[in-house]
Image 1 (cartoon, each protein chain N blue to C red):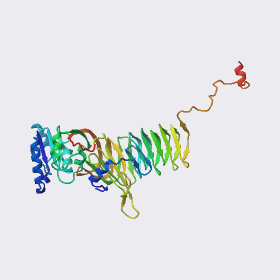
Image 2 (cartoon, one colour; image 1 turned 90 degrees about the horizontal axis):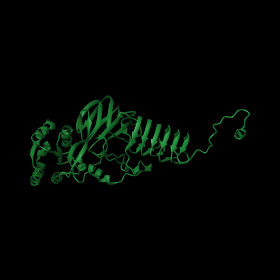
Image 3 (tube, chains in turn red, brown; image 1 turned 60 degrees about the vertical axis):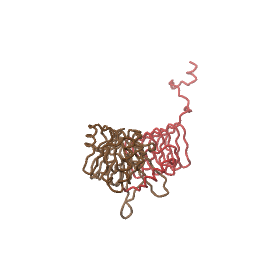
Image 4 (cartoon, rainbow over the protein chains, first blue to last red; image 1 turned 180 degrees about the horizontal axis):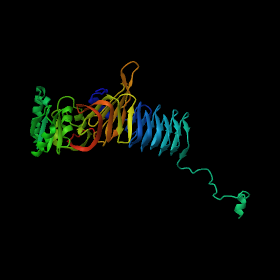
Length: 159
Length: 254
C-alpha cells in the first residue's frame, strides 16, 4: 500500500471525532462528500448530492443542493448552482445560490450572481450583475404608449 | 444448516486451541456444521452452490480479510446468508462489521443479526473490500457525466468495506470514513507530481462518491482487487446494491 495508513484500530477509534474542520478554511457541520484536490482537472457536468470542496480546476457546470467551498487557488470555469457557498478562489460563470454566499478577500467572480444573502470581504473582485431575492427593481416601469414627435406626455394625458 | 469455510492458514498449530474452543462454543449454540478447507486453487462459488443444493442456508467464512475477499468476490451472487469468524491478524473488515476476533465471534453468529451489504462490481466480478490502481496515467469518467484527470500519474483507490485513511503529516486532522451501506462507492484519487530532481510526491487526495465509474489508461495499468492483481487498459466499476446478506455485530461501523 502506498498510502500512509494508520492501524485500523487507531483509525476506528478516531471515527467518533466529529468532522468539523475542513482544511483550515471553514467549519461545516456536515461531512465533506466530494473533494476536487489540487492538480486535478474536472470537465463536464459536475453534480453532487452532498457538499463539494474545490481545490483544483472545474470546467463545465457545477451543481449541488448543499454547500460549495472554493478554496484559494482553485478555479471554476462554469455556471454554478449551490445551496450555499463560500468562494475564496476564482469563478468564471454565472452563480445561482439559494441561500447564502460568502466571498472572501481572495475571491474573483466574473459573472452574474443570484443570491438570497451575500457577504463580501474587502478585496473581493466582482464583475457582473448581482440580483437578490426579496427586493423589487427601483426603476419605474416605462409607459407603453408611444408619442408623436410634437406631442408631450401632458397633452396625451389631457386626451 | 451451517457450512464453515476454513482458510488454509487456520490449520497452523498456533490457532489449534482457538479453533477447538470456537467449535465447542458453536456446538453449544447448536450451530455447528460441515467444515470445508479452502486453498489457493479452489474456487469458492461452485463449492457454495453445491452446499446450497444440499440444503445449506448459512455459509460462514473462517479466516481474515484475505479469506473474506477471496470467498465473497466469487460467491457474492450465491443465495445464502454469509457469516464471518475472524481469526488471527489482518482483520480490519471484522471490526467494521462489528465482529470481535476470537471465540466471541461465535456469539455474534448465534444472534443472527442480518444486514444487506453493497458490493463493488469490476469487469464481470465482485470486490468487497478495496480496489487499488497503482500510479499510472489514467482518466476517470464518473457516471458518464464528468471526467477527472491529472497532469501526470494518478493513483486510484476505491473503497467498499475497508475504510481508507490518510495523513499528510502528524498534525493533519483530515480524515475520511467510508461506510459500506451508504449507497455509493467512494473513489480516492491521488495525483503525483514530479519532485525537483527525481521521484514523485503525492498531492492531496480527491474524493468522489459514485455509482458507476470508468477508468481508461493510456497504457496497461496494474489493478489490485481483493488481493488479486491484474493488468487492465479499461476498467468499469459499478455498485451492486444490497447484494450480500451478512450476519453482523451490534458494534458495526455503519
